[in-house]
Image 1 (tube, rainbow, N blue to C red):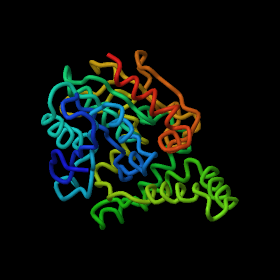
Image 2: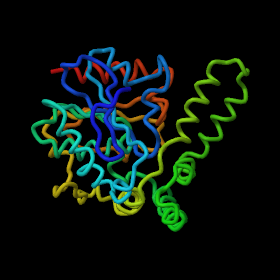
Image 3: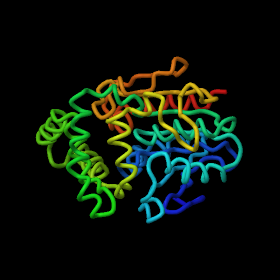
Image 4: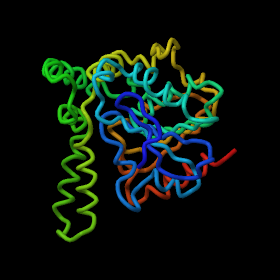
Length: 299
């Protein structure tokens, strides 16, 4: 995908769609590469949206350099996303997946009247919606990886994955058990490998951003408690001056239903799937892609 604009190590890529259309900026999670949103032909949410007439742009967090390694989650919004958004014309719609959705909430509020629509997919906001065991495990994970991360200068994805596996360890075992029953030439084996490759990929996370996720998110729940400040403002979903759509998966253990935003005016929709399956699974087109595109087109 061609690079439209960039700042530091963060870039906005042009996926496709009408050049004169209002921009739809897709913000993926920080923790893995954005490839899950563009996995393969027929398995690409962003290319589907472009084919449906949206001007789709995609944030690529990339190999964040020295300038990003000092930024926490709030800094990545105020010092990276907002300057990039300022270079896009007219009203802008945002679509955030997972932790990218959390950042999209802040960006949508800071955009003020320039925000057109905000759509979220499996985006955590109320960290007190995670189980006490999960929150305790997250803090223990940070305690165990903090010192080595400081020595490395960032937090590799391989050091974060055990936490996410622990949130739904039975599902991790079940998916490999199901894989063992498939013949070697089953096309699903290829899809399985593609998703696993994505899940184990991604640039290292800046230490301040990881610290914010663990301590300010899982630990203190600053977002859910209305105490997360970005760009000088307290971020609150009810302050967003645009319609908000929130998709969540009923079988999601990475971002359980209780962790999603709870604003009364949100168009909240549930998908009978898991955290990744809702985006690339066999039913993703009917249950997520199509209704999402229709909602974004609605005026």
